[in-house]
Image (tube, one colour):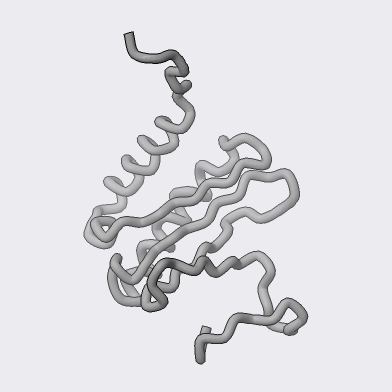
Length: 119
């Protein structure tokens, strides 16, 4: 936020669907943006830190990820929350590579975990 101020809940321009995450270091303020807010529906947010690049690069990465997630969010269980954290490598990745990585991550989440111990 300009001047480092957070929007007030009663402020007319405050957007309750946007959450600002406070990272360890104040220089790396991250913004989590929902894709499909609504009661009972699956939601998604994105964490793209300054390590990914300047504002133009971060916004481009968020737009690409938002587009990819929008096409997949209906397949998520109702009420689930997906948080996509972009690593610095995401800035230089082609769209199809981002898509492949996102699909692999979603598939890994769907796989049942082995609850038994090692044998």
